[in-house]
Image 1 (cartoon, one colour):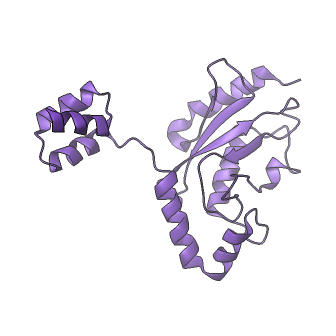
Image 2 (tube, one colour):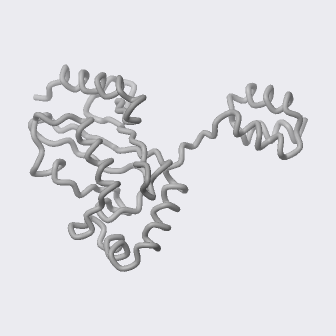
Image 3 (cartoon, one colour):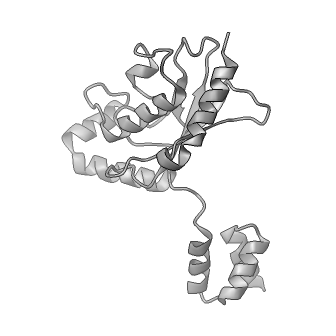
Length: 196
């Protein structure tokens, strides 16, 4: 039987430190179901994943914490140890090296560390691993492109949106009030500004 009190404590502890680590976990549904979770982690600095924010689907088995959580990338990522198709992760602590002493945050930190130190000799995605070993510059370019295309936080900061629309020739005051009126949706603001 799953230890729900432990899971709640883990979520609380993980989210308490989100400002330092950038790692967070929350239940996927609104019903307080702690078996389906969504983890979020930033791409490590100095890697092709820098600047990206990656979502990880987490399923807690009935036997958690005595069985490892099932984790896979919901965000597409180009990495030798992560399937570019399914998001499956090849990481020992998610399999036979799991211990009940580990936490969900530890597991996410290990996944983040895997982004920094790929193991192409033990691949989850053979195509990516071959590219990593034979043509690293192309691998790095593809990984950066995928990070940019799939892992960028979707919402530009409000100031970025204002600047972008002002550069299109709209007055700043009108841009700010229109963005506010449409809840920060840049495309809706543009439509309103064009039709206004």
